[in-house]
Length: 184
Figure 1 (cartoon, rainbow, N blue to C red):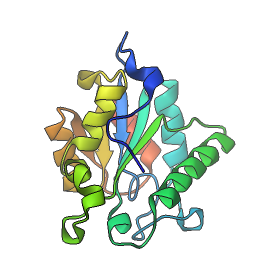
Figure 2: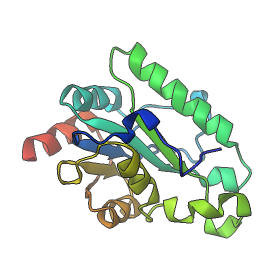
Figure 3: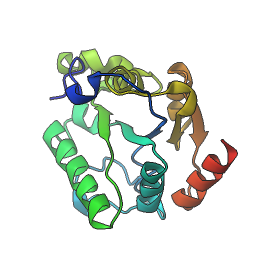
């Protein structure tokens, strides 16, 4: 179970802030086929692994913020999501790239109210909770950071957290990221 009060304790010391990128998962890193929770369901977006590597090489912290209502719906467990995220990091490293610094997911869904997940209501995008939690626990420089998402709810979450949001409509993620970096 995620504890929204805990985080990466190593990074709690905010000595110097870093530019950071927040990535939605389904539709940005991998194709969104609905309720992805197993490695066999991951079909990487073209250029996704390379985009993460480029961002890391450019000095960005890279985070994933993803709504996972399948947990509240009883379709899969938090353990399965956490295993998938660890597997994704392993795959990123195997390809010669860099891993994601941290993952946040919201198990909450308003149609499936569950006391267990009530504390995560604000974490569900368009709420900014996942982003704000990372900002609290990592040395994020808001002014030099941005989010890439494939839905307006992602962009609204970024705006609510005072982070610039970019809407990814598909294609090659590396090309998309290169264009963003060139414009900044």
